[in-house]
Every structure is written in structure tokens, then in C-alpha cells.
Image (tube, rainbow, N blue to C red; front, side, top):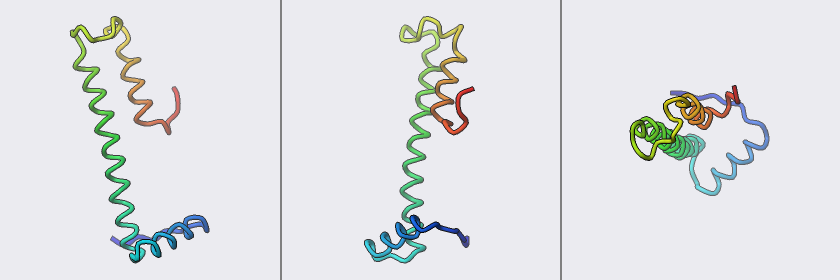
Length: 90
């Protein structure tokens, strides 16, 4: 895949720094950056899904909040808010 991106001066400076500091070409700096960001975002998604699974798994257990059956939407909503903060509070 070919990528074409416009970078303002601050991003161009960061890219130049990374090229010089790592002795990598632009393509390799971008690939390495994507790899690192992917790992970070993927790990965060897994963590959030485990939390949701934990709430679902709590149903009927002694660790479940006392109001889980009547307020499950609240608990699921909190997880969704954490997962997608860019959508804001509804």
C-alpha cells in the first residue's frame, strides 16, 4: 500500500528527528510507529473487553453489584464510554 500524508511543521520535525535518531528511512519509521501504536491500542481493547466479560460473568455471583440486574445498562455504558471517549457522554 502506498501512503500519502500531509504533515504540518511539528510532525515533519518529529519525523525528521526519528529518521536521524534511528537511522531508518521514512517508510521504516512509519512502519515501526504503526507497529508500536497497534500493540498499544490492541492491548487496550483486550483490557476493555475483559472488563466487559467480567461484568457479564458477574451475573449471579457474589461479587456482582447488588443492583446489576436493574442497572446493567449503566455498567455496560460505563465500559462503552471508556472504550469510545471520543463520542462523549450521552
